[in-house]
Amino acid sequence: MKKIVLGLITALGLMVGVQANTGGIAWDKAPNNLNDMASLQSGAKTFVNYCLNCHAAAYMRFNRLKDIGLTEQQIKDNLLFSTDKVGETMKVSVDPRQAKEWFGGNPPDLTVMARSRSGANGTGADYLYTYLRTFYVDEKKATGWNNLAFPNVAMPHVLWELQGKRAPIYATEVVHGHETEVFKGWEQLTPGKMTPLEYDQTIGDLVGYLQWMSEPSQGKRVQVGVWVLLFLLVMTVFTWRLNAAYWKDVK
Image (tube, rainbow, N blue to C red; front, side, top):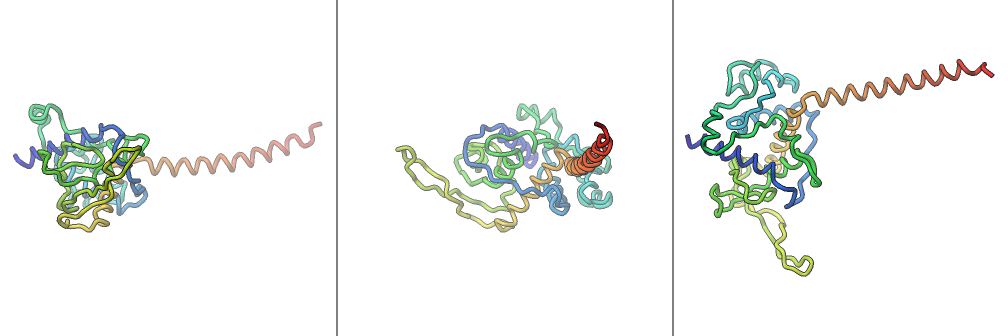
C-alpha cells in the first residue's frame, strides 16, 4: 500500500510539474535519440520499470515496441509486468476510482506527455529532460524533495537511488540593484548507483523513448518526406526539360 501511495503522489506531482509556468531555470536541451534503437530500448526499459507502476500509456501497445528493434519474445520476457498479452496497451494496476478518491484525480497518461509541454524555454522533451535531472533534497517539503525546474513540486524523486542525493549551490549576486540567489551548481550529498554522466544518459534515453512514444511514426514520416521531396525534385527537372523541348520550335 505504501508503494502505491508513493507512486500516486509521484504521478500527481509529475502532472502538476508539467503544468508549471515557464519561469525558473533555463531548460537543458534533450538529446535527440529518436534514431538510436539501443537508446530507445533502454528508455523503454526505464519507463516500464519506473513509470508504468502508476502512469498508463493507454494509446501504446507493447507489440509496437517491435518498431524500435525488440522481438516479441524480448518484450514478453523483459517488459510485460502489467499484462500477459503482448498486444495489450500499457496499463497500470492502480484502480482509477481509488486514485480519484484518494487524491482527487487520476495519474496522467504518458502516451503523449513529451508533446504536451513546450514554450520559450524549449520543447516538451527539453522540459522533461531538465525536470527529471534537477531534483534535490529539501527537508522542508513533505516528500523530502524539491525541484529546480518546478519549485515546490509535490513529486518525490523516484530515481534518487540512481542519481544519489544532491543539494543546489547558490551564490549571491546583485541583479538590477538587488541581491539575488543565483544557482551555480550541485553538491553531491550521497552517491548514486550511477555516475552523473550515466544518469544523464539514462534520463536522455527515457525522454527519447517518451518522445518516440508520443509519435512512433515520426521517423518513418520524415524518411518518406525526404524521398517525396527528392522525387519532386527529379520530376521538376524532367518537366522543365520536357517543357523546353516542346516549346523550342514554337514561334
